[in-house]
Image 1: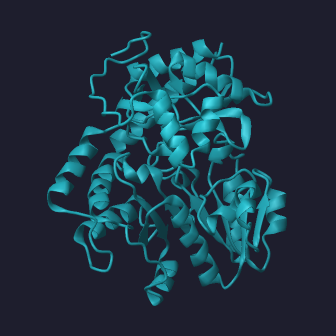
Image 2 (image 1 turned 90 degrees about the vertical axis):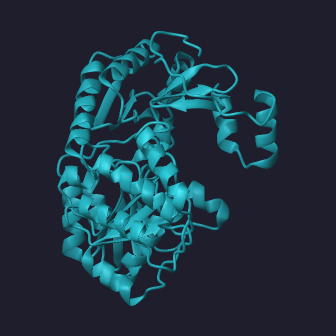
Length: 417
């Protein structure tokens, strides 16, 4: 293994076999057969990485052998690290006896996964619909809000992101939906942390406000004191639903299973994805309060997803929830959060976070576009925020040891001093 500096842990995981001879051949095949604009953009920033071996908080370039700390986690997919052994064991066990399953039939393992999810909400939410992606989960949340309220208008946050699927794409920046005939009618955006704009936007035709508790594509900006609670009250007072997107802020990131629990609010519907996979099998879910669940029961084919709640993924999710919905684990996240706060206190950049859901940046336009290559060179994978290029997303793996965290903190500070 390449140990280019003392920050690299002693990893010995096997590297997967590469189907192409070298980096250039791999890039050429990807460019030829995939719509790989993301890869082209990253290569323009000097990041031509092709992932080979991966374990815990790091992954290795397949051709150079260099190891990188993962400080992005692919939006939370790798919250529990790469190739988490407990989750791999659950996956292997499921593969011995299960397959995708049949979404038309009752399934015990799917029901158990839904039971564990609803219990993680402390009884606030009564029912679950499993989906294949976070975008699909948000599509359903919006359709439910419109169906239950009989209203059409949906308000989202400027710089927010809720997926690229048919409905959810209209809740984000028009640059994503415009090339495909969008955005759809009935969608309005207001600035983050601007309560007066939100108050002006919510009217008698507003079905829902959809938002993240920290806009991920803006660098996980923090809500001002009382903002989320005030938005919740506006929704209650005016008959609109509050939809919280937990795809990136949930599954333990804030030191609570769900970020809305940290903030003391209770969304009518919330969604999760990415992290529900444990990094090994895709899962997503829409969770809702009882009256909304009752509405869905009246229309049993209101949502159908062949792969939603698949039995292999459900088995992995049950194990994952046993790990995350655990006071010891959540305490570990809070301890790591304090460690990063203290470690970055004298850094040459600003750092903000709730738990391990945060960002680093400077009040300088495009700062992140220059910081990202420096970190990459130093062996740290971090990603600029799509709608706030003065900030990098900072989402370290949640199972890091204190020693690993110290090493990562040191590398980041040295690279950006």
